[in-house]
Structure formats: structure tokens, C-alpha cells
Length: 227
Image 1: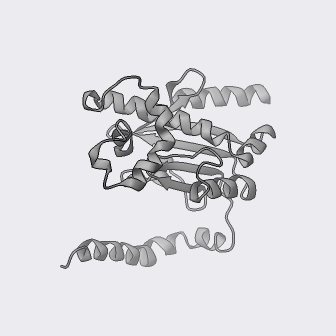
Image 2: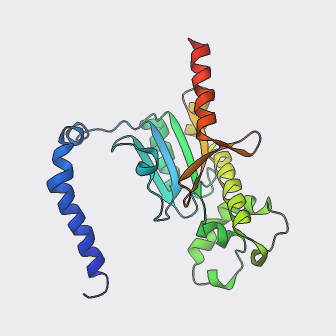
Image 3: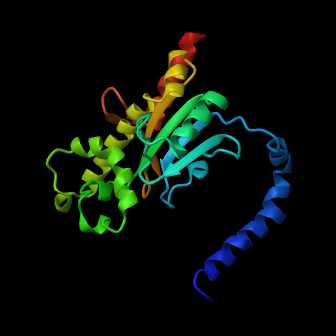
């Protein structure tokens, strides 16, 4: 087949399967979503093809309001007003989501690039280079580490620092600040370890990771105390 036609045909075959097999089994769900949406969570993650938010969180259509971009970046308010900022404002102020999750991941190409924004390989990607400058503070936290000396553990640490930075950027957005002040919004940072199929929660206070199990246990204990 001509360039791309075989993969496009695969996508179209998938659409056919959705229309004939998947949709009929969940027709009631899709009909309920016909005129409105009420997602509980704004999920901000990387555009990386290896991440499937609905698969990882086991959620149905209508539950997640998803924003994806290179490096799961949230520009500080006023820096780059555009797609990300408008999506945050709409999700928080109009849809009234209860949670915002920023999810980074292992082996992130954006984090590899962030290690050296002056590298010649980025000369042909000026827009990517400019975009990644929104994460330079995370790179600064890595100290004098040289790109050529960075290993998988360093890339992971940078990805985690980046998630924490983007959570801080979120707190510069008026809609987020307003919702937080009203106790109507929770922010959380995640790191998705792709080869191990594990999600870790980033603790903003200690700047360390926690297991999903420990966070769920803590949330359960808090609910019992509130009763």
C-alpha cells in the first residue's frame, strides 16, 4: 500500500468494529453523553502514544477531560495563553471538575530533550524547543548534570520534577486558584512507569513518590474520620 494507507486502513477497521460491536453494547452510555458532559477529572498528560489515560485509570467515556501535549506541560498563566490555558479554564470554571491530575511518564522524549535545549537536534524543532522552556525550572533542579551523562534514573527524576513544576504552574491560573480557595478542587501529580505498568503518586511536600495503595489507604482513613 502507499505510504500510511495500511495503518489508516487498520484505524478504519477499528472504527468499523466500534460501530458494529462496541457501540451497541454501550449504546445507553453514549446516548447519555449525547448532549452534555460532566467529567470528574481534568487529566493532563504527555502526547506520547504509549499512554492511554482511560486504560490506565479504567474510566469510561465522559469521565475524563483530557489535555495532551509534549511533556505534559502547563505554562504559567499569562506566559502562553492558548490551548492548555483555555482547557484548564473551561474544565475548572465551566465543567467544575473536582480533580486535576498531571501525569508524567518513564522514558519521556521531552525530558530527554529538556536536558539540553541548545542541542543541534532541536534546531529543526524550534517550536518544541520554545515549548519545553516552560519546564526549564525542572531542568535547573538537576544541577550541573550533562545530557550525555544522564541515565534512565536521571530522566525519571527529571520527569518527576517536571510534574511537580507543572502543578505549581497550575496554581497560577485564576480558575484553579478560585476553586482551590473554595475547597472544590484537588490537584495531584502522577508518574506512570510504562514497562512495569505502575503509577506512583508524587507528594508535593516531600517531593517523593508514594504507591497508589498507600494513598488510597490514607484517603479511606480520612473518610472514616470525617463520618
